[in-house]
Length: 397
Ligand code: SAH
Ligand code: SF4
Image (tube, rainbow, N blue to C red):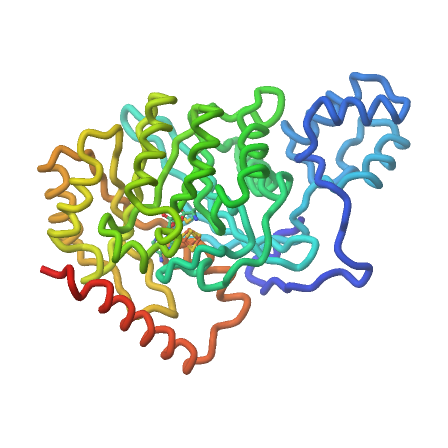
């Protein structure tokens, strides 16, 4: 893994083909212990490997100097210590936000973001890492750059965890550590639930990454079977639901998965999670000028969430090339927040972090795969204007 500063990153696959070795950080401790033992080494060596991986955030076997050379060589042959082949980092927000574009062994690009929040009175310093769960996304929300990329593939557990280890290593050099992880980068986490649950387990496991169990948030566009699965496991993670519209016809456009998993059923499933865990569900609402930001929209959200263990987070839309849509004005966002507040719904307004480097999901990767031709952008915009108008037609006030 190398930081290439301002150099562009390639999507090249090495001449000898993609690296097929499993990622070490995706191997459960018991399995690693069994592997070490079967290599004829003492059991404590597995703990040493774990230390290099989880405390020192190693990216190569050559760093594991206290291991016998034979074990190091065998480990390097069997496993990849980091699944991130190359990384490009861009700063923003005066250095408080940093965005990484990672190249995987098969040339796919994914992204992760570090957001640092300095200490405030009564609040400790935080370092939140936003990670990807898939390369691209199949859901296709029209305001989202990942949706525009389309689905490429699921990430495996190590590819997910290694994004966090990347930032932990960088922060450690400055005497800091990762305090929170949010699954809000590229991809729909609950359409890759096996790997996501295993990654979150590794992150909160005290003998592995050791993150505070309550410091993980998983954001979903509303995959009901995935939410039900979390409810059955009832982990102490925060569940975030990307709502963006309460009215079904509009949500069909903004979050196309609504046609498969309708919003009312999604909120029911999320409420069951809240009941099982005692944790408030966070509803994310991207504010798009003239599309989902009217009083009628606020009333619909209030009606949907009234009496539930819920909290609404309003996010001004980050502009993306392929849509004609723009963020709502600050006044409109404040008015929308006031309407929700007046209806008894807890609400906050999130300032966009890192807009200048394209921190909305998928923007950096989309940029690197090449901008679509202007004619294609125009056609997409026209189509969106049409479907948007059709969805809104009967409902506008
Ligand atoms: N697929 C999951 C998680 C990743 S998206 C989900 O949709 O919940 C993380 C968040 O970024 C979502 O709430 C998504 O709606 C939001 N997002 C996507 N594109 C955006 C944009 N252009 N501006 C602001 N937020 C955006
Ligand atoms: Fe996928 Fe989330 Fe983007 Fe929608 S907002 S396209 S679900 S990553």
